[in-house]
Image 1: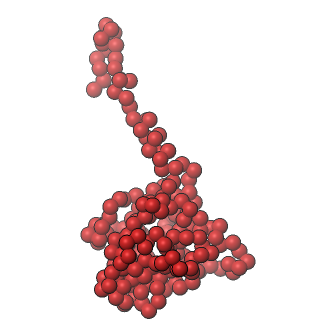
Image 2: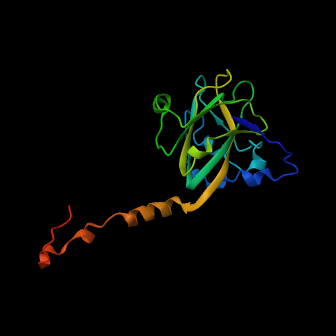
Amino acid sequence: MACLHDHSCEEHDCSSTWTLYKHIDLSKVSALNEAVSGSVKSVFRAWDQRLNSSEGYLESNEGDPELIVFIPFTSDVKLKSISIIGGADGTSPAKMRAFINRDGIDFSDAQSMQPIQEWDLVENFQGLLEFQTRYSKFQSVANITLHFPENFGAETTQIHYIGLKGEATQLKRDVVATIVYELMPNPSDHKTRSESGGGLSQVE
């Protein structure tokens, strides 16, 4: 489902609602089938800079319009909607499929796995359309993989901007890992008093 802004962005601060780009672990963002290595990182920026492609854009290899974009976050997020600005002349992506909390998805995986949600996209050159998620399914998102299987008929697919709308939790990913580690039982904690004559055996 696509939702059009129902207000003038000149009168409202839209940038305040597209805050998740600040929580993207940009150093770990990656793409499959990008023509220029690392170019995917240029599509994440502030809302008010969404039409500024001076630092580049993501484009697929010639003759192969399919793209996969992997987006990890620095903290768990709740994702409400996604905005995609594509290229002109049929290069905008026509479909988008999402997978969450899965690492290392390749094209074979994407074609065989069931996405958590998929959308039929429309050309969105101003970035005023946002594609709503099934919000209840996009809670505690550590990473999201976006699969763009086709475009509007061009030889390559271009993505100039990806905007993510939602909210981030206060719990950072490295903190979560530390908590999980500290909660893991220490085998020494399960030793019993069998050696001291307590009559109890060691917990298996």
